[in-house]
Amino acid sequence: MAENKATIVVFSGDMDKVFAAFIIATGCAAAGMDTTLFFTFWGLNAIKKGEPIKAKSLLGKMMGIMNRGGIERLNPSRFSFGGIGRILFNKMMRDKKVASLPELRQTAIDLGVHLLACKMSMDVLEITRDDLIPEVEDIVGVATFVKEAANSKIQLFI
Image (tube, rainbow, N blue to C red; front, top):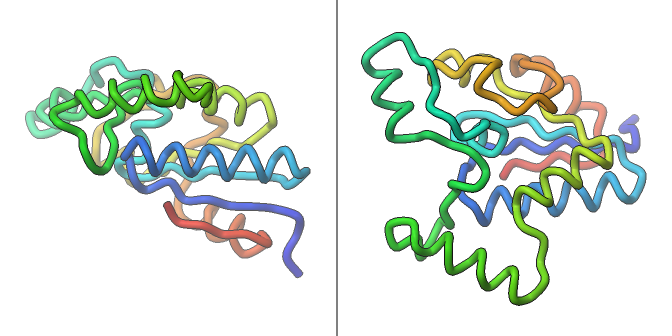
């Protein structure tokens, strides 16, 4: 029987999709659900510090330069306009008194949302534990996600 839990895979690194993941996660946590966010591939950008990674291979270094990450660098999935879309959306959200992505992430942390990072994705992208924000609870494999999801009332893939 499913427990009062929500498990959300954050696969996308698009600003609007990460925004949705944190809105849903904070809503679930505020409703008393034990909530887990599992960040994989581009979704890892939402929990990266935003500093250049210390990759070892040439491809890893190139990826680190092109994909620095960090929640404040995320661009919308549409209307990015080379990064200007992010600035416009952030202004629109401020004007409407909507919490910023860093504020939403902090709210999720304050509400006890579990932040997990995908080990395989980190290995492929040459991201280390030091590249992630300290609030990330653990670096895990897909088996941990599957166990969490199997025991959850809500499972989402964003």
